[in-house]
Image (cartoon, rainbow, N blue to C red; front, top):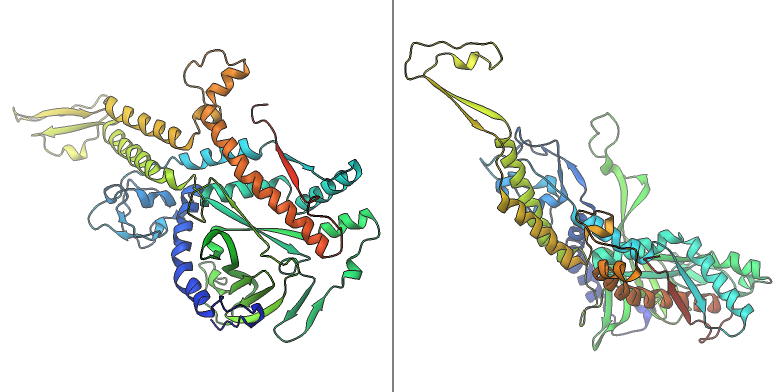
Length: 482
């Protein structure tokens, strides 16, 4: 990486340190966060990559959560956060019937539904009804232009899976809150403030649609924090690989259908460095664009899923469930193997010649002169109360850890009494409501900061002037039980 941070005019920002973040830290963090996402999404991969480890009991695909199962079940050994389809063979061990019940995804989705399922409202703290309506209309326009309800649901999903989510505020498609940019070849891309000045409120709303709110996935984020305060972002670095709408210069092997392979699409390594006074964008290690940051501070809002003292990352809802999810999948797979072995009648023939060529069917007689000949029947499913109890207790443990019970998803197994009163409902959903209220604090604070940064961006761009007091917004969440 050939970085040049002269534009930041800060001796505390080292090119060597940022290079270390990208080359050493980024691969490690990417594997860690990719594992969390795979346990949430549980993607499917075609089986038999190397043709080994697959038996007559296996299926034609494997799932991501299989990396947490023992080799005696999967017939494969996995290292680190490797995809489930690319583990190495476990030798002579054949693959058993693998059962994956993704108890993580529906719990995360239920928490998102309770938090943002009914939408939110913004209430401005500005003085005067007209002024408040204008500010609320601007904020509604900005969020609608960035996906509306989908934006908040994505915010909650990313935060719940990774433990945190960062939101980058951009202006007019350029890097953050900037009205001018200089490309690496020295040409200038500028938009004058006079041209941005809106003569009517309708033009203000149209200009507000140009504010982009970009949610940064955790595997992209490499924040440079203050050494004495982990809560403050000194510089924000994001690094990712971007797929281009063009073919690579070197062609790879053809696909099975005679077309071009998927690896022939051009990929570009992108690095963005955002500071309080300037920003830079590098592509494949070369400076592509840079400019001044008119906002005067790092245009990133950090939102923790659940607060974790002493750490930049918050608590992930997925990470704390991985161990229990692996145990549940292991026991479900063991039960499937047992049921497969015992659910069919099998026969052991002794002293009968050629029995292998004589199928078992009605009206067929077997004859032999061997007086010691016998046919023994075995198999059939047997009850295993300890196994069922263990699986039930694992599910209960996941309920306790996540705070999400099957009742939240509408699964009613036992009599719950009269749930017609609000008190009865709150008692039933107490764990879920408690976690929802905690998240309303962390996500509510993050959304308020996003709103304030959006209004400050429009103010610095000369589109809509606001004072610091007018940028204060109250976020009102709907009651999840109504």
